[in-house]
Image (tube, rainbow, N blue to C red; front, side, top):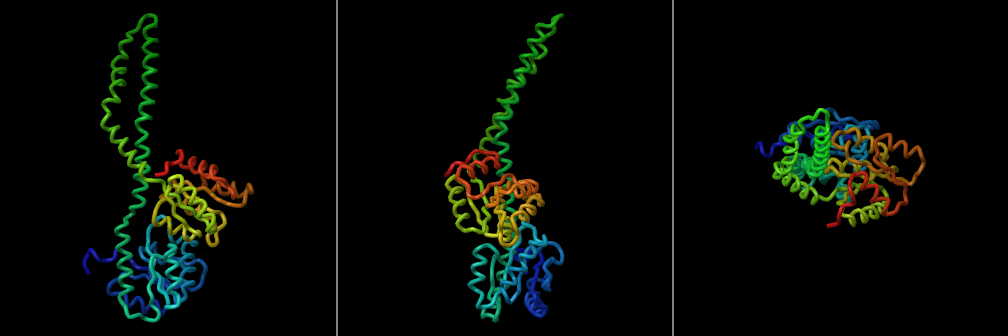
Length: 350
């Protein structure tokens, strides 16, 4: 195997059958010598054998078991939403449609028909090689882009900040010069002239650098903010998404806490709108996970809920929520709170 096609890390093979895990491991060993096995014994707190895998292969004959096991890894904190990985699920013929739907929703990345053994025995190998290839191409690109855009927006404000500071400095120089001229005995007010000249020449001397900062700001402005909408109610997701897209935001969606954590491992949003009541991992736990990871801690999270009780508000704030919106809410409230959380005005639609 050439270096360009060699896998970048171990494959974690998870199954509820020791025999199945041994069989699949023996099939893959030539192409993927670094295989870690994890046997699900039914305990609720499943743990990875060591660290987070790059590629996770789920070999459960019951695809619902595969989903429950994968979700248990997130619940137990064994998988990090901030670290990219790929997931391949094996399925039986009768589960192909279900597997397709789950991959389309983003729960898994790929599926392979494995039971019964198909006429394409290399399909599994190709799926794993493709998973590693995607990880190499991604290389944290989404996080790097988000970080670049954030820093570019800060640099773009440098000219305004610097001009304001210089104006205040020049006002102080004028006041000091007048004070020196009127002092008894008279003092040499001209001592401040070199400082005044420097202050006057500073902005022109930085012209080329400030021009570069403006160009970076213009490039950053062309990257529309990404909002992740997490809600198990499809109507609510579509409603919020319609409002955001009309305001010029890019949108991504998740219908559960599990899907939200998977989405966060693929792309870093500018803001998260998170429903408190989710069917698997509740919103408060998703919020806690995000705020505990450095790569996600700075992303503002606005909690959405039909529960306006004070304890829900206090609890969300204590965990680090940027704001709180009680359903049903109107368009102006939603956009206003998002703009405040981002520290910007509403973004212009393209």
